[in-house]
Length: 437
Image (tube, rainbow, N blue to C red; front, side, top):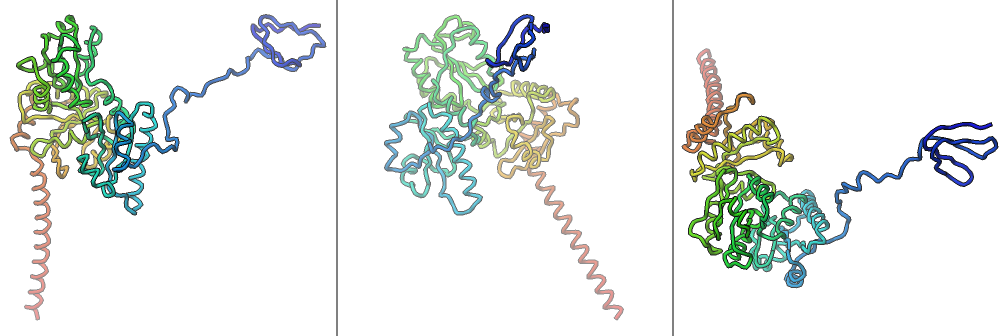
């Protein structure tokens, strides 16, 4: 007698182990079979984490303490040296933990970039005061990067991912070459950053070399591009040895006048035009941007680019910036809350606003006092004209954060007046009692 199992693929577990049988399976009586099944054994699977294996600190010490004795040796060893200049570690537990957290961040970054020829060191401001003075370090808690004869201060968020991206950008070539139409399209899509592009005869051109030298002064904060292709130059309306300067969110560039240029002329022009009319707060240079205020204030706009209302509000801001790009007193700081998730609760508490809605206000950088435009409804955002009128009131001083302070002082005065009235009533009652006696 036989049994017909018509599964297309079967697995049999017998004396000789597991065997795969394709097609109809005929089992004869007396054959030694333990299991007959048409379910294949579970395949060998890779762990899901294999393709997304986020690095964790492996415990190996890669960050060393820098001293006058080992400075030259370490400097020769690496192309780029990242130095954390810190105050002496105190006995306070909170301070110790804060220092340890920063040390772990540096260790993790050093681990991730171990193959990139970047050294990581720490400099104690007290123990190595002479070395710090020699290097020009004067701000404890700062991170400095030595690359060639340049010293770059990192003014961004002290986080591993931000530092890694910053350092990777820093070790790349300071000028990116554009050769194709697709690369032109990619260049044109960079709208939220300051960028420059020049057209030169070749890499051996003395004017290209001056352009390249100038780019190193601003790497990695400002992007420099170049082309040697006549077709690319024609598409970008560039003449030979000409450099165009693109302000963020502007439709048209500014051609740097009086070509060809020296390195110093390019650097001077960029520094003069470095503050844009509308700029985005970025994790990699957030503190430098915040310190670049105008008369002690920032006009700050919060808008989520990924949110429909936020996107619409950002487009209105762009229009206002384009219409007022020649006003040197206007610089709007756009913050996308999605870029700073750890600061959302702090900003909402400090500024007393809802960051899930578009907002624009004026902020005093000294004490964080602020005044915000009344936007009652997400579906009824201000027009470009209404926004311009509000900004004009800010620039003229009609709207300012000091008015809010005066209001608080008036409230305090009112409270004092109430106290005085209460005291007067008590004195009157005392006088009445004396008269009764």
